Image (cartoon, rainbow, N blue to C red):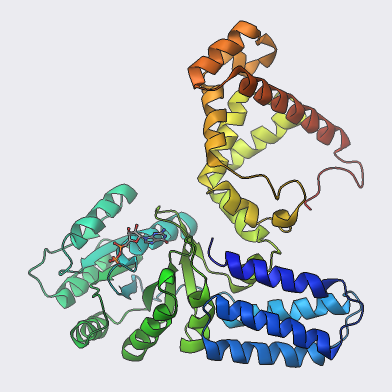
Length: 444
Ligand code: GDP
């Protein structure tokens, strides 16, 4: 994920101050100096860093005393609050027009991920908010842009309004809004043209579209990988169009994250969503507070829970719970579980959202190789139905057959069987202690 370097450095810094029973002015000075370097190295805008450090220093020195926290913890609390503030404070919502459809204009430079993000946003609106969006193809210049949107529409099973490349984009946008009204779509997402660089002609066209459709939101899509350039691009689009929010793409890459931390401070416009991958479900609402937690290694349980909720069917979850309780959990269930976890994203990304997980002994040196999951899946898939239900059937020749069928080894099969038995034992213990005060499972 982005921010890895920044995150490591900030965590190193706060570790030093965390346990302190007394924090001197000198301690704060040293800490903020390290924070400053970490931010600059993460490519955060120079002026933004200067203001940030000044605020942290002032607040940390004149610290209000809270009984529940050690002085060291209080300083960390200040850093977290300031980091949250820097990225936008309260989480920002998406507009809903009084009279539908809500019109969203998507703008940005070519290659930023505008078309993909338009599809992702439509998907998110439907999945999380139960909306019925119409997509509109108003980029008539980039070869294949219309086709790309149509492909996305097909994948999402969502209608796309297009009029080819010979019609004025202003008319396409206007017609799309009229069509959305007629066909009772509550949102219309207009994918506009991009250019390699900001230019007057492009801005003129975007301004004309804006005047014609009077959008409820103008979302600027910027590529986090472009670092400081992303901030400059945001500034000039905002000057010309007064955008309402920023959608930051490619935060999954190993960018240094500086753009995410500077855009709000420089433009005053909030980051509303973050693209975390190329797939259509990899767009997350940008929650500054949760992001600050993630950066400081405090985890992001809320996003993890939300992800789980969109992937896990409630009925299935209930069934699973009862199976766990009476220990009738089988390899079939295990396989299903793995599918769901896999849908949530790469394992180490998920792990990053669990508070303290990245610093947990034992987990630090484990590399979460998604390939291992593929092996486990292959092993289970090579079992017969009976074997999946009742692993006690497994004898040497069966194990050999399974290893061969899955392209693994007998020792890998044995390892999985052992792990599965241990897991079942643990479930039994958990269900036995259920209800008894003070026992049961706890998050770290
Ligand atoms: P447009 O020219 O702005 O419309 O850009 P596209 O939507 O065609 O996207 C350009 C490239 O960026 C495509 O290969 C996308 O798959 C990729 N992309 C978009 N968003 C993300 C993201 O959040 N993460 C990653 N890794 N790739 C992305």
